[in-house]
Length: 340
Image (tube, rainbow, N blue to C red; front, side):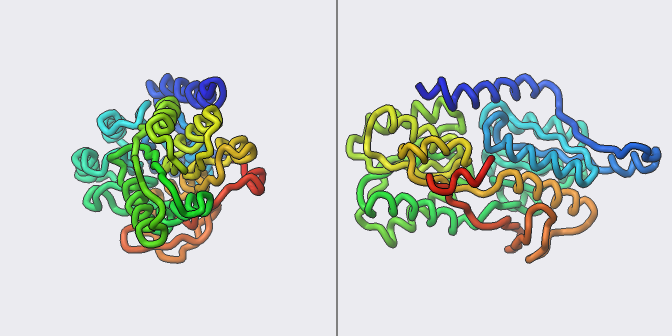
C-alpha cells in the first residue's frame, strides 16, 4: 500500500513538525570571537517565513533554503506554518509572529482573501510583508516572490499530459486547495491551453487534496473509480502526482500521470512507468531567495529586473512580482541528476 511507502515518510515528517509547532525554530548565527556589537548587528532582523503547511517534502526543502540563507546573511529566521493547509490555522501562526514581533513576514497563502486582515494588521504595526509560493491580493503585501510565470507553467503542465496521451481523452486535475491563488491561476492556463490546442482532450473533474498525502491517495483512487475512461491526471501540488501514480500502479490502469512534484518523490514512479513526467523548480532556491529579498526590503532595497542573487541566479521583476526562473521537467531518463 502507498501508506507503507511515501505516506509513511511524509506523515511521520508531518507528525514531527506538528510537535515542533509548539515552539518556534529560531536560527541565527554568530561567528566565534565576534564582539557584542557585532552580535547585535547579526541579530538586527527577525524574519518569519510561513509555508502553507508544515511537514510535506516541498516545504521541507524550502525550509532548508531559508535556513541556509539565514546562516549566510546572519539574520534570524522563524519558519513555521499550520499542521494542515488551512487558512484559519495559518492566520493563527501569522498572529503569533506579529505578537513576537518579527521585522518581516513572508507568507505562502492558503487563501488570497482570508489572510488580508491579519496581513494588514502586520503592516500597520510596521512589519514588512511579502508573499512567496502562493500570493494574496496585492494590497496585502509589498511584492510576490513567484517561482515561474503562471501562464508559462499552466500551459506547460497541460502540454506534458498531451504529449503522453496522444492529445486525446478525458483527464482530471488534482489541485492542492480550491482557494489557493497560484494553483487556480495555473488551472486557468491549463484549461486555456487545452481549449486552444487540444480539442480532443476533455477535462472531466477537478478535486482538492488539501496538500495531504493520505487524502491525495484516496482522492486519486476515487478518480479512477469514478471515471473508467480516464486517460490522464495532472497534479498541481507536490503530493498529487506521487499519490496518483501509486493509485494507477495498484489499479493496473493505463492512465498517464504528470504534474508538480519533487524528483525524490517521483523517482520510482517515473522509472517504473506509473508516472510519465514531473515538473518543478528548486524549492530550496525559492526558500533562499525569499529570505534574501525580505532582508533586502528591510534594508530599503527592492528587487530589480535582472538582479543576480547569490545561490539563485538572475531574477526577473514584472511589476510587483519577482520571477525566480523556468520550470524543470523530470523524466525516467534525467531524474537521477536531481536530489531534492
